[in-house]
Structures are given as structure tokens and as C-alpha cells.
Amino acid sequence: MKIIYDENGDARMDTALTAIALFLAAMMVISFTSNPVTTGTKEGDRAPNIVGKAYNGSGWQDFDLQSYYDYEWSMGNNETKDSQWVMIEFMDTDCPYCFNSAREYQEGSNYFTTENPTWNGPHVNFIASATELTGLTGHDSSREEIMAFRDKTTGEMCNASNVDCSTRDGEAYAIPFIDDLDRTHMDKWGIGGTPTYFLIQPDGMIAWASPEHQDEKFYEAINRLVPQDGA
Amino acid sequence: MELLDSNTLLAIFAIPMAVGMLLISPVGESLSASLSDKFPSLKTTRGRLLTGSILIAVSGFIIAAMTLWISNTISEGAGFCVANNVFSCDDVLGNEEYNKIPMLGIRWALFGIIIYTFFLWLLMSINKEPQADWVGTNLKLGFIITSTGVLAIAWLMYAEFQMGKICPYCTAAHIGNLLLIYAFWKMGKHYDSGEWHQN
Image (tube, rainbow over all chains, first blue to last red; front, side, top):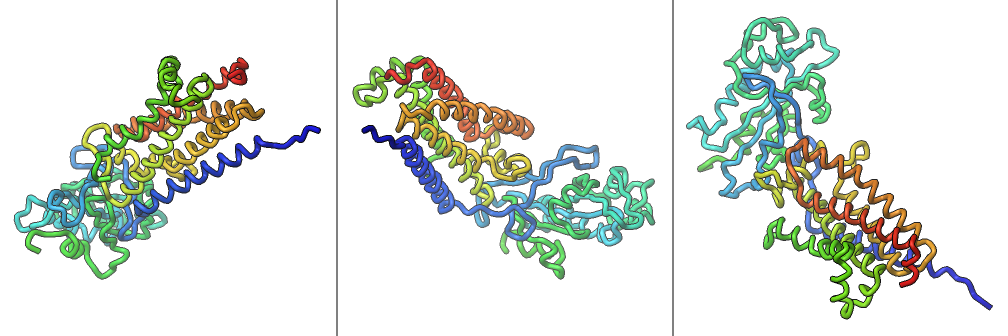
């Protein structure tokens, strides 16, 4: 009598177990030798990337936040001590607080730079991401308004469309202003209101987030967290 | 990992793929003839194709695992495979816009390991039971899935083009997939001709 049995099923099952074992072994090695960091907007998270257009004074250029990073950077590494930090402000040209605090941010961008002999730390790249908050009276922004706010030029109305953009405090900015009028980046970063500030380490990790430090100003955070010679 | 740079490691991981490629290629016959005394399975066309395919899948599996590891270390802030020239996997794998499967949100690197595990299962099961009645189905399945992978490869190449960067590890994993398309096609042809069962 011929006994029929299914050896084929066993071959597939055996190899499936081997393949699963290989997969699990690889995942274990990866998990033991690396420690992935979440992408998010809390301190210690990797900052979500921002890709888009930014106005730098001469025109709207391609912008990629990751291009500022130095992945070889580490705190205390002398070879990367000149790597640059990033301070980003999420703002709205029609937000009264952003309008009134423009001088602070503009002066900060001129102070925390290697061109300033008074500042003895690495260069901090100041960036602004200009959005258009919805559901608020007078909050209708445009690229022209962003340009006028940045350059302090006349003809556009800022601060809830109440005053000419050129009347804001401080000098004209020399930093890039990202176009986020469609709120893509703001939503991605989970920004609840403007202005919101983030200090990003040269390796792309968020070192300080203003929502977690309501009582600390952005410049105080830079002074506290960015390593300075002799500090 | 600090002892060897990323390119040297990739070259080491790609050795089985290169050997596998030779075995499944037309020159594989003469190569396997010289090795068949040490490795009897290489005496037959079926054995040569299966061995070559498994070597390619093993290499692809290791390289895919490595891309996930690099992906993780990038998120830590480390720069394992970063370069100022066009070949920089950190720039590609660290790009949040492109490093995940659209809509699914799964990282391409993790998907790569899963798919190579599947290829390994297909090939190892065929190798273990080459005369089984499901072998033809497995070969067709392997061919269909590796061919579908071309769409993913095309999308990833488009992403690399957009970034202006090339990820050498990802490219090696893609080459592995392309080689497996050829290998599954060749084994399927061999199977359909009936020669598969003869040797």
C-alpha cells in the first residue's frame, strides 16, 4: 500500500521558520546597535524637514532645512565645533505679537553670528517660516506681504492688516523667510500659535522648543545651550 | 563599524551578490565547472541558478538590513554614510520626504528587509524541495514580485534624482532585485522546458 504524505508542506514550513529567524536576528542586531530617534517637535526629537521656497532678499529660492545640518556633529567634538545651529521662528506677518517682537528676532539674527566679535559661539542660522493663520480678522497674507515684512518696504499691510509692514520695529532682516502660506510646515510641526521658536542642533535634533519653555526667550535659550568658547 | 568605512563594508556585503551574479550569468557554467568538485550542487544548471539566486538574496538581505541600521543611526544624529559628493546614503535615507513608502508610512529600508526575507524563503524552499509540485508557482511568484519591485525602484530613483543624491546601499539592494528578476525568469524558463526535473 502506498502511503501518501505531504513532505512539500514541511519544506516550506522549515524554510519559513529559517527565514523568520533570520529576519528576527537582523532586527535584534539593528535594535541592539542603534537607537532610532523619533521625528517630531519635542526637545530631543529630530526636527521634521522643511522643503519649499524661501525669500532671501533677492528672490524666492529653493529651501531645504536639512542642507543646514552636519551629521558628523557631536557636542564636545572639536572638529565640528564650528558646525552651525539653526533657530527657526514660525510666524505670521499679521500676528500682532510677531509684528511687535520682530526687532528681537532681527537683532538676535545679527548677534548670534560668527561675524559678531561679541558672540564667541558657533554661527546660529536664523530662519523664519511665514504662515497665514486662518479664521482671524485681517490675517490675509501673501508673498508680497512676507517680502515687505522682511525688507521693511512699503505698500503691504501687516499686523492684522492694520499698519504698513514697513512700520515694524527693527531693521530689515537678512535671513530667509520660508513661504508657508498654505500652513503645510506649520501643520507638520504641530504649531499651535505664533510665534513659536525652535533651536536646532547642527545634527538636526531639537535642542529647545519654546512651547516647552514659556518663560524663556529664544536668545536666553541660545545663550544657555549653544557652547561658547571659554564658557 | 568604525573600523571600516561605509563603502568598504558595502563592497564586502556585495561580494556574495557578485558571485551570485556570475553564477546565474552565462559565464556561470564555466565558473561552476571549476567549483563543482568542492560544491557538488553546482554541477547542475538548476543548482547553479538556485545557489546564485540565494547568494544574491542573502547579500540583498544584509544590505537592506544595513540600510535600516543606517536609517536608525541618522535619526540619532550620527553620520555613517554621509559625503559631500553625490553618493551619500545619509542624505537619502535621512530625507523624511522620501524615506517612507507613500501613504503606508513604512520606511523603505524596513520594507527592503521584509521583501528580501520573502525572497530568501521562496528560494530556500525551492532549494530544499526542487521537485515539489509547487516549485513552478513559487518561481512565478518570485518573478512577479521582483518585477513589481521595478516600480518601487523607479520611484526611489526618481526620489534620488529629486534630491540630487544617490544612496549606494539602496542602489546595491535595487541591483539585487534586478538580478533576481533575471534569476527567477531564467529558472522559470528552465522549469518550463522540463530540464529542471531532469537534473
